Length: 258
Image (cartoon, rainbow, N blue to C red; front, side, top):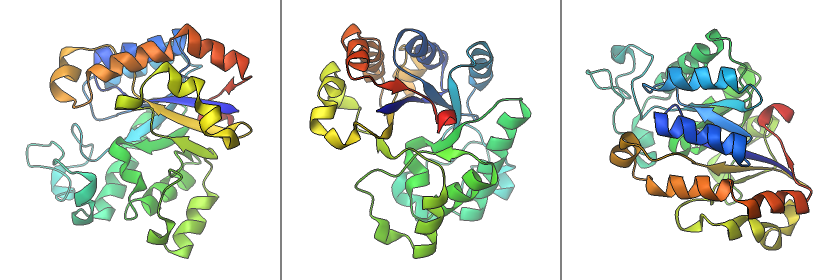
């Protein structure tokens, strides 16, 4: 197996930034995706410049932090106080897709203007999985020649037109994405039993999504997923998981190796 272990939410807070770097140096994290709309984005960029072997993608968002766009130009996404509206996956149908494309383009351009080499795109709360936004994500991945987080195995492709499915298939991505290393399923056994549960993954390129962090005041008070991030970090650094990587001849890569 070629395995990408991608840490989401880089840039969210200092605790998250340093937790990701710890999971890279002392754990099995090989890739991360950066939020560009948060106060600690600048610190995350400085850390990436010191850790260039860590693959960096962009964690596109329209519901966290402050947008790059003038709020008057994206009224379905932003409040007049220049913060994103509290948009959930379920109310995506109410937003303007053109506004999303505008904002996501500015977020990508910002990172490229920093001289950063981007490997891929994914999105906060999986917004790019939504049938209304997936075509936009595919368009941007193609335009910027970036890979993209693949749809989960149980995705309902009937929600996409044939043309949209064809466009998605043309985008570079892993063969399989695991998004269930989360909450109650965070344990060493998740890894140690993975190939017994999913033997077909042995010869595939797989991405595993994770959220390691140190717990700080921002994560504790602002994120509904807080203390479990620390447990993720512990598991990702576990000697047993390192041994599993070695015993199974798993090659850790990032999206830039696809």
